[in-house]
Amino acid sequence: MNALLVLAMLVLGPACGAHGEEKQVELKAAPGREAVESNCASCHSLDYPRTNSPFLDRKGWEAEVTKMINVFGAPISATEATTIVDYLTKNYGIGG
Image (cartoon, rainbow, N blue to C red; front, side):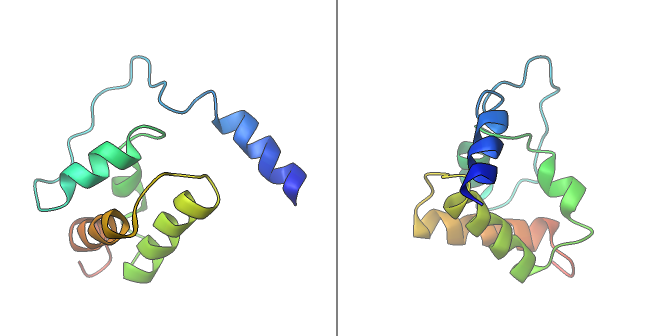
């Protein structure tokens, strides 16, 4: 399992933060948007919430944010994680 994690980090690591000519995604204006933009966009497109919104409820977004912190090492504080989950649930969650 550790070898798989190392492989994932090698593949994802160089791409982190390199968006090239990617069009800027505008997230919904709501409390918490800044936390998502400042914490999430450094490693992946902000289109991620929109493409996953048909599938994720609050528990799903909590799992995604937890994965980003615990598996991929995102430096997100517990307070910011709650803010991010709240924003994603309310604006891009099933039934949000």
